[in-house]
Length: 293
Image (tube, rainbow, N blue to C red):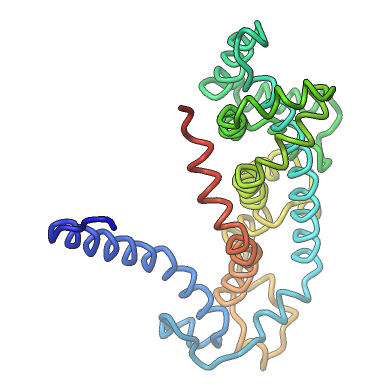
């Protein structure tokens, strides 16, 4: 039984109250955006919408989901997430496994570790990176959004620390039974590392889904934009001139503000759906992969 003093109880109460308050502050903007997206044009225009829809309507969502540009951007983002996740996770695992070994087993480990850590501190810059993407012939393709960041070093560090925390006796037993490094990695290390893989996978998915700047640079037309890049262009540039196809009745329920809010909320919805299923792995994997005894 854990002893809990009065001061400890007061600290826990204050700490929990602070975290609950911080959580509410983080979710309030999203609730406000959702309320605007479900409200009428007049209510949103006069600022009457706070945390609950006023004059509830789904017209903004009907308008957004009928736009081929928006649907195409969702497809581009899903394609980027699936391909980016596969490439990132494969390279992270293949890189973290040898770097998790001791120097006695892998003599050049320290040199390779420093080689990758330096890339976290210094980059080639925007112009050299753009020139590299252009000269390799992937400019304007989905690979321009994936290959430049194919090896996220921070995620590699998390994964190799988790690998180093696994008992060495498991690997030694596998070698005694005749397994090689490839079999040991995929049949022992990867199955035991699911919490860490879920953590790194969540980082990868959120990173690809939210990235917008590279799409703005490397894509040649709006039809190639992923969702985040498309939303960035919509939020900054869209005005009522782009909504001239609406009739008078629709204009009463749809405005530039409610259409933007609907698109922003739809853009955040997939991550909100995925995160609860990975949360327990996320917390456990982040803790286990952060400390090496």
